[in-house]
Length: 152
Image (cartoon, rainbow, N blue to C red; front, side, top):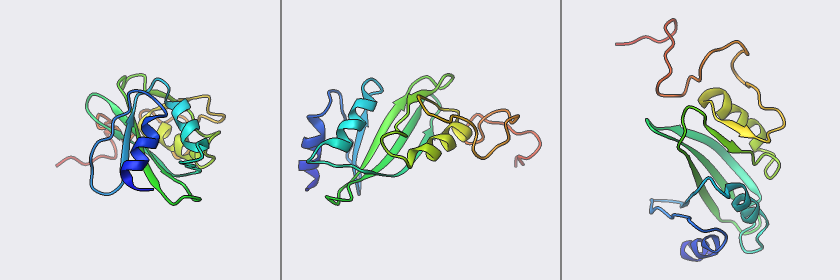
């Protein structure tokens, strides 16, 4: 499926989708409201069949956090970068997609551990790398570690 056809097929699934122009892959910025329903549709729609979550991570900005999902259709061969903007950095949360794509189970835990994003409905929302008593989330820009960080 060509890029424009892919955009058209995705645009009919939900209102408020944005398609930023970027270099390599088709990108969609989706609103938080209805994000999980959009993910279900991306997975189940016969014209799209995004059955594989390649990767999932977060990007920390001064005033928001963006969740980034790389999706692929193994049957149809197209790839998509799906983004969700979380505007509340202090109480960053999103709905889990770990029941839609099993690869999200550990990736959401990683984002929780390192960025502090809580995934509602996740079956095992606990730290994956750091110890339970660790305070803070090291990949946040405002994270300070007085002992281990060397400032120049």
